[in-house]
Length: 55
Image (cartoon, rainbow, N blue to C red; front, side, top):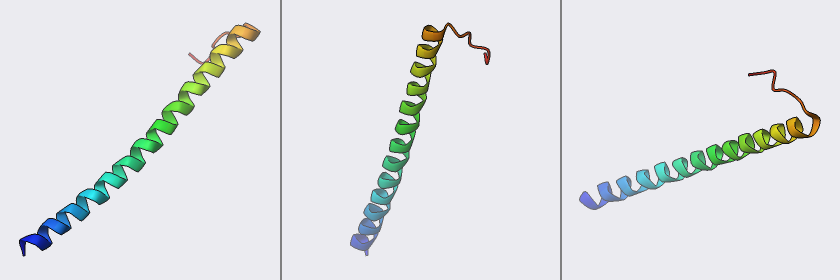
């Protein structure tokens, strides 16, 4: 039945959309965390005159 196929395709698309949204949220959170770490590192370097020895 075409209606059943359409319904299955819609359900699959919704599942993929939900999964992609979760993945995007996870990556956005990781990016925000990395940005915060960089800001803190620069702040510490400016405050304590530390050199970046890791680079």
